[in-house]
Picture 1 (tube, rainbow, N blue to C red):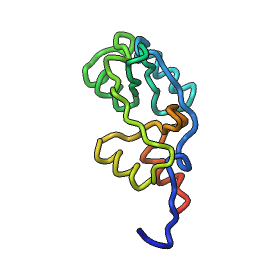
Picture 2 (spheres, rainbow, N blue to C red):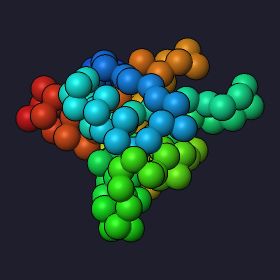
Picture 3 (tube, rainbow, N blue to C red):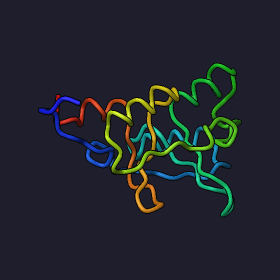
Picture 4 (cartoon, one colour):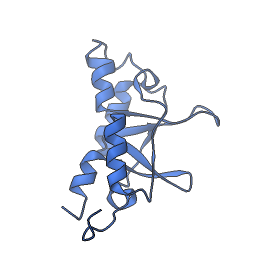
Length: 133
């Protein structure tokens, strides 16, 4: 590591806004929420205590609705979401966050601290919110 470079964590570059949705919601309802809240992804709530959360984003709507030639009213979120959700620890160095996102092929992940999601970090955040650029 370059000695002149300082450490930045996922928490320092993340977007704090997180919006949750039920997996039974339609793609149309999800997009309406995303537009209203000005977010690029939604966290899909657990169905029960032993379940895990999922995530849905623009890429999922393209693959699961547009390419499959379906209407947004006939597709439920649980059908197109990515699950299980990959999260990153709040104190993870952004270099490792970047590697994780690139290796797994995802564009964003929730940031987790004390077993709770506290924000979302995206590939864009790693550059645009990075004080080292």
